[in-house]
Image (cartoon, rainbow, N blue to C red):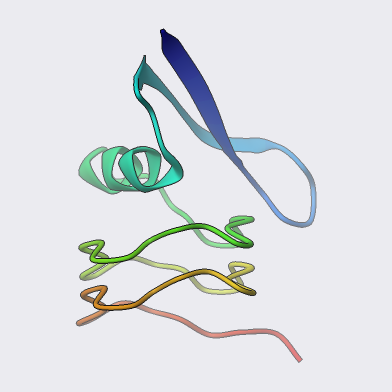
Length: 84
């Protein structure tokens, strides 16, 4: 069964990226977004399971990563700046 997951802007609610596939997860969707050079600035990734994700070079400036699981994620060169 195909599942569509949308990554939305945390401030406007507009869809930044969407991906649909069998057995879809937020991790698969984020990885696909990065493969497609999607800009994930201001993305709502609250509570996302991103364990072991390759986020190398990702622009996650102002992304909402509260309670996201980033254990063993590769964040080399990633831009992660949070708001106040």
